[in-house]
Length: 376
Image 1 (cartoon, rainbow, N blue to C red):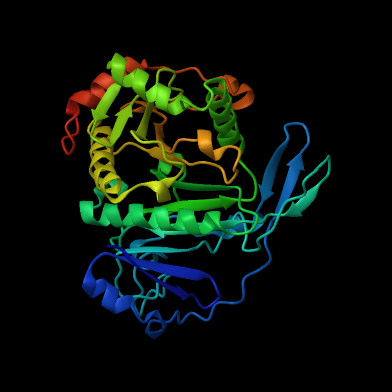
Image 2: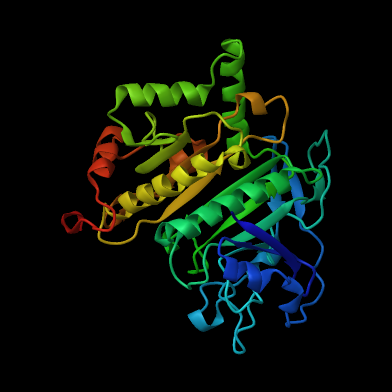
């Protein structure tokens, strides 16, 4: 069982401890005993959101993020436990998993509704919330380097925050994700992820939700699009990577990226909070296995984005939506990355330099913990 202990930082931001071990629970049970001693100034106002009438998309303008922390040395890491020499974002001397409001937030802290009929020149408050998820107190690593116990606690934290953020006023989409590697743009080496609670449905999520809803309606609500894709991939077999009792991982038929894997529950659920205990248990082992296989492809760790696609906060879209993870990497060889050039960046038309079948075969053959030297 994961225990949840909320508290506040000195500028009013919420911080939440997630603990599985009783000694950690005892340490954080009275969170007021471990106070943030930094005396931070009050938080500034939220940024702005501008409406792009040409695309129909909202763009956040968050100039204050220019001053955010960038690759600090270990003794100045803001995600490590606090010491007398380093008063970090986490006041405790040790912790398991911590979630807190991002000091350099793209959205929020104000909550509210964006204008319902925006037009050219519409500007609004960038409502919403951005949170940081510190996976572990160790300074270096990623989700794939966690113990099974710690990974399970992170999954519980994602689920709890998804449910809590989804209930906040004006929130339309909750997005849990992890960026790993400097080539992805990571600014902190400490193992962590983020959660964005958007005041709108982002373009990619909107496209997926619309396609899912159209298919669901066309089958009179008898079948989901992701459920059909999962069944098709399991039947074909040549793009499957892992098959478990509750989860399967496969390289999608029309993969966009050189390395792309979808991790999908066998039971349709709208978001992470809908997963049962036994499903979360298996997700822990399958996800760690998948990340281990990814890192076994090459002699050095592979940069990636792990993106949880969850249902929008919309009663009309949720019945057709199907939780799944999209794990993508621009790495196309040991020493080569795919950059988004003209076709992808300007037109959104992807050209893949690998074949999904060969990538799936390589991942099936990969042995976690043993990087392949012959791929250098």
